[in-house]
Amino acid sequence: MCMKKHIRLDLIYNLVMNYLSDALKPLKQDESVIKKSLIGTLALFASIFIIPYFLYQGYLLKILDETKESVPSELPQWDNLGNMFVLGLGGFLLSLLLSLPSTIILYTPVLLEASDGAILAAQGIGSLLSLILSYLSLAILALYARDGLSGVTDVSRLTNILFSLEYLIGVLIITGLGIAFGIGMFILILVTLGLGIFLIPFILPIYNYFIMYIAGNAITEAEAS
Image (cartoon, rainbow, N blue to C red; front, side):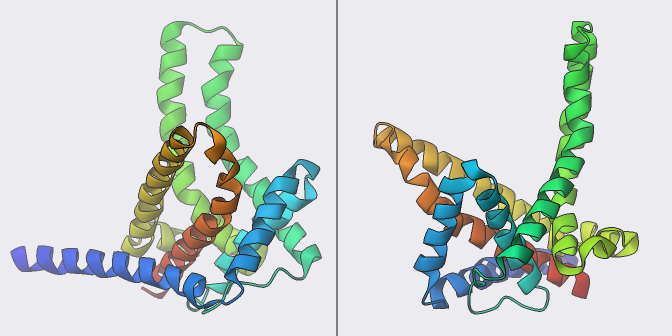
């Protein structure tokens, strides 16, 4: 029994190390990584005009698509903008659809001026549902990026991913990195007396690219298991 536990811990450790090292590979080897990161920054700044926001989301989904066999040595090109826009728009609508159930549960009792007990119960149920849907979202978005709506509606394929150790570890890594990133950005803003907030759009694309490579790799490993 102890041997099985040690083997399991070794497997988890290897998955974590492989995900992190593989996700760093394109960021280290792509000679145009700064250029592609700055394009992402420009898209974020221009997101007020809507279209650049969907282009940015499409680019992130493109990373999920390009990791369907293995992690490439370079970031995707910022090309085929029409296809990237449609991909980003579709991903946004899917994410919106996934967020609706928990949003309805969380805010309907408040809008109806329900009792404090009902609001508290709704917050608990809504928060739990939100966590579950967040766990689902990366896998669903990856299948959408790779195979369109036919991938999203493949229940057996989706189930195989969701209940795999490979995907679970990937999501836990991403969650931990998200917490660390949030804390780091908060400290940066404090240290720079608020000026650091202007640096975040320059840091965020690289961080998001890194996260997408971890997610894509985890899903690919889950499908192969």
